[in-house]
View 1 (cartoon, rainbow, N blue to C red):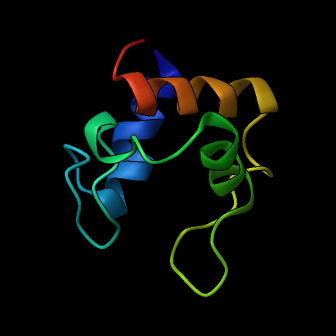
View 2: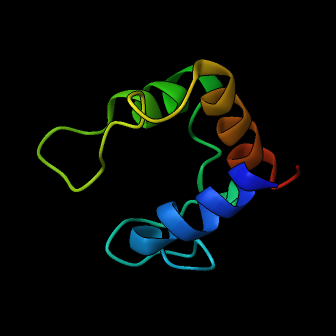
Length: 77
């Protein structure tokens, strides 16, 4: 699936190819449990100012962002 590839390639370029952390923090499901879906979606959509986390809203639809949030929080497609 294209979105899974995006998570592992594009997000993985900072968060590590296995998502265990790198320049950015670990984004595997067990490390994101403190996020509710809405907050994580906002982080993906708007980025985090002053950090390397970019806003993805210009590149992803809300439906795609929702899929990424669900994938990150559950680890399942």
